[in-house]
Length: 448
Ligand SMILES: NC(=O)c1ccc[n+]([C@@H]2O[C@H](COP(=O)([O-])OP(=O)(O)OC[C@H]3O[C@@H](n4cnc5c(N)ncnc54)[C@H](O)[C@@H]3O)[C@@H](O)[C@H]2O)c1
Image 1 (cartoon, helix red, strand yellow):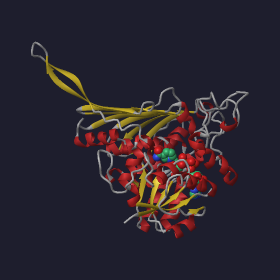
Image 2 (cartoon, protein in one colour; image 1 turned 90 degrees about the vertical axis):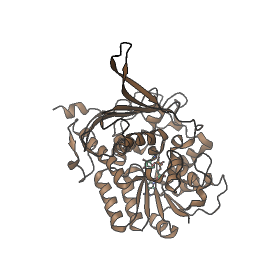
Image 3 (tube, protein in one colour; image 1 turned 45 degrees about the vertical axis):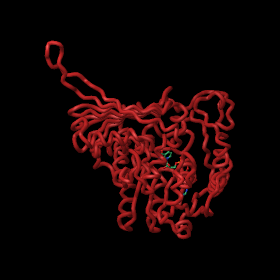
Image 4 (tube, helix red, strand yellow; image 1 turned 90 degrees about the horizontal axis):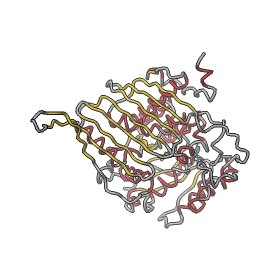
């Protein structure tokens, strides 16, 4: 039996990952997906964007018609879907999830599940009441090196974990992309600690099988600020500096799909995809550091920076019997994973010394697969019930409760940011949306 999917939100994620993926586009899905899945509706409040997506999808044969909707209630009733895949801006997740659940649909929500603990609780309690399933598209779990870390920690390869360090430095183009559009409005994304770091918080908490009890965060908006550049424009597509600016987004790439989806659909909702990143309209930070204490007593820290010459992500877990160092270079997409243990070795006089020995674990090159190094495709395969290789397994998919832990981490950290780094406890969340962090004159506001 095929699973019927209604895709809600046909933007940067809805089209390539879910629509093309479920239709088995090369490097986005497997051909077998079409035997397991059927898309029964494309829904977006901007119908022009939906039409642009449909036109793109028709570049390859589609074995059936794809109904389009601009009204969610109508889509829920008419599509007769089993699952709604929700790919709308982060703060809109809750209202869309609640409607879909109310309509009896199971929900597969793009990460982050929501933008506050309060919203997660609303979604999860409604899902329980209506007896529908909740999954969250934490695609990062489906990197092979991440799944390998999970196995190693589960097997006790480094004993009991006591400490962790993790972080991501984003290159200019990637890190700046969040400052072109809705993400840089705290009231829509709850900032990068929620929108972006939720990936890493989910990984850390899932790998450790633990949840955070308190967080302390500091941050700043260091780069994406108003700049006095006489030649720069309000948006990249009309900017004289677009050929040289490392932050410019090219709206004509990939056969003009961005132009068709966004610029040509602007008249419907006024959504501008390529606003200049150098502005003070933003209400989020671009540079963060967070400390966590976990339920088990493990402590750790995390950094996120939205600008840098070289993009990379790293994780380190230190345990009673060794440590794991792992990461990925975003330029080459090469991952590394090493397990380090102290081994006794005798010197020439027979005296025993402790010596660190590293075991390198490598992965075969899969040939530059699209969609987060193939993680998107493996996530879809896992959802459709396939179990193959190291990172395709339905057991890896994030549940709603697990995804809530990541939001708890971000929610506490956001409250801490707003108060200049006070330690915030989980009991302080769940009642409201976290406050917007103070903006560039923050020092004077925090230091009385
Ligand atoms: N897992 C990942 O790696 C990853 C990567 C990027 C984005 N995301 C997540 O995917 C989601 C979508 O991000 P995106 O980059 O595709 O954004 P986008 O802005 O490109 O697309 C969002 C779409 O939602 C539509 N929309 C807005 N309100 C709606 C509503 N009430 N009902 C229906 N449609 C509505 C918009 O018109 C737009 O087409 C976000 O939650 C984001 O955090 C995940």
